[in-house]
Picture 1 (cartoon, rainbow, N blue to C red):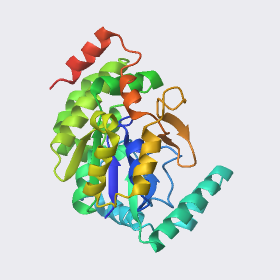
Picture 2 (picture 1 turned 120 degrees about the vertical axis):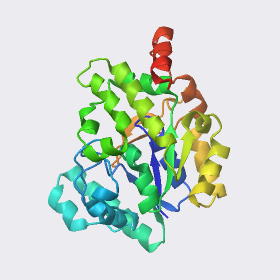
Picture 3 (picture 1 turned 90 degrees about the horizontal axis):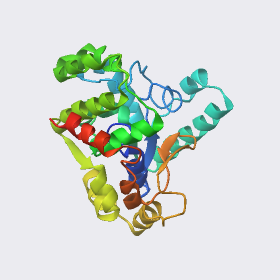
Picture 4 (picture 1 turned 45 degrees about the horizontal axis):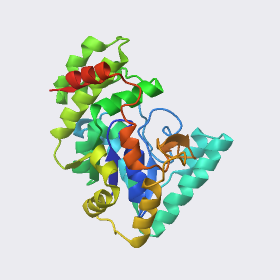
Length: 297
């Protein structure tokens, strides 16, 4: 059974995915629905064309997506398709890494783990049609918006509103029209958090998980996620998670954020409890209060 870890970007999906893969039963697949390359637009990993951030997948457009994700879930790597599309030295190294991981994982009977925040609005489809065990991370809204502000990120709501099936199934997204073209990054990030969290809370068949609760007490938290995903909790997995989540202060691993490796994951080892304290960093009390107000439903 494939595992999907999703949630808005900067909600701990990469960290959670890496910790679930630490047990050795899963092959980690990073953001196949990301419209940017890398890590997305890799037909060896996913043989379908992503057209929007937060691509919406439902039964009405599953003709392309279902066979593509079935191949990904079965760890069938498309070597020739990848080679035709991406041929830089970096791409060739990535091809070898993913192609080998898929092949060896399939032969060893491992399962795929999809770490993909861009699947967050389609989480129900992954659970219902692909039979995924879906873990959806939700981060405290103040820490979420603060993280986006520190990185200078924003959201372009036309990428959601230009998807008719998404708006049909989630008409509450229409309220975002008022912020199209706005330069108020805080208001836009807060609105994205509010609407997306509301959708996740109404989605059956997924496990909604608090990032803060998981980070505050990672070992029992991950043990529960291992049980939910049908993974073996082993002494080796416990040791790896302990090393990755319990770094001492001053070792340079407190933030848990770095674009690194061939998979371009944002995860790096950290002290997860210390990372919680740093979550709202950069915001004034007035800004934090405003975000609380904007995200209260």
